[in-house]
Length: 498
Image 1 (cartoon, rainbow, N blue to C red):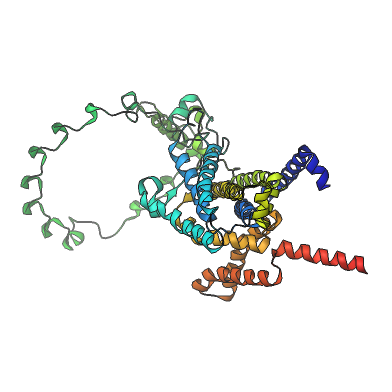
Image 2 (cartoon, rainbow, N blue to C red; image 1 turned 180 degrees about the vertical axis):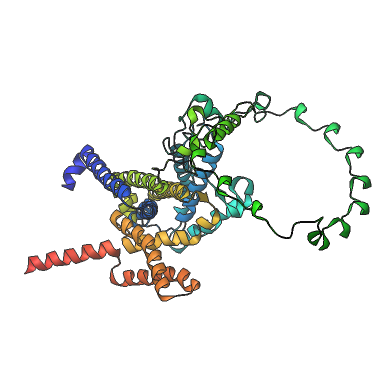
């Protein structure tokens, strides 16, 4: 079957596209029926899978060890954040900016950095290559500290991700006049604010000499407080100004006891008739509302049609049917499926065979006309592209980017996930992503049941990762997928022999 598909590249492309669409449809349906917390786990799993698809190509097919893919994710995340926060339109095109364009620019940045790093890494092998990528993993996130104005420094950047149209509730509850006066969040990529007066219309675009402060804008000596403006001793209250005990006991003071006439009777309370008659409470409310909504008092808080548009919105200004975790998971799933489709076509095509040839025997590949250096650089470029896209997804999941989100532990986790799942298989990358998301939650639940200390709970996942890696290397060097394939092959050979 594979030989037939190799002859007809269009058929292979169609099969890969159908596979990606089926997986996308199933995961999208699953995202709609699970609770928001599970949608968050699904989004995180898809993000890890996206990054580990690149790790599979780099480590499994190209044979290059990388400890710096977490730094490449940081590059994508920061580009996503900076562009979405500072750019309103697409350069040269002039179209409105949205999250898709931020994702595209993050991928372009990943390709550029991947080509630069790959050009250096192509000359290194073994521990030297690992040392280079380790330095990248440590150094790249620290660059944010050198540019705090642009990248936020240690605190990072908090994002308001430009969600798609329809994510916010519509404001067309009343008239156009009501919509212009409302300060609630609007429809589309940007919040809708109140329109500034004409004299301030161009203030945000340019500032001239007229905007500078003059001597008249500062306080003069006459504006300063003097001693006469403060309270003197004669203005202070004395004991004679307070009531004494004699004021409560004499006839000139307060009465010492209440008489029957001072008590409240039924006539002093509102009855049911006061709420239904024209002279009662309803009329007073109408009169007060008329005054407040622009009657004689000239108020400006009128609600057209008697309806408060804020009542149509929840406190956050979002549609009650919009679940942000589901939207984030849908983006992560879409990116993972697109990346998986591209990765399948690369691996099952000529480029995949080139990577495998250079991995198995660089000298023989060079004799055959294949450039080993070009093959290694291309693997780094593809891996960096996938990592940058995963970093952009990570940024929109967290709504935050900072050095603390892209530590060395993230790079090591990606490497561990690929080794555990199977470094030669994309299914192994998905299994590794599930392990990376599930294991910390499992340890957290276990520690809560047994009352472990926080220090043990925080370090237990890393300890278990190390044990699993040692176990996999000793028992199943090909990872979980490789071990299963070995067992299936052994079972088939035994059945044929028997």
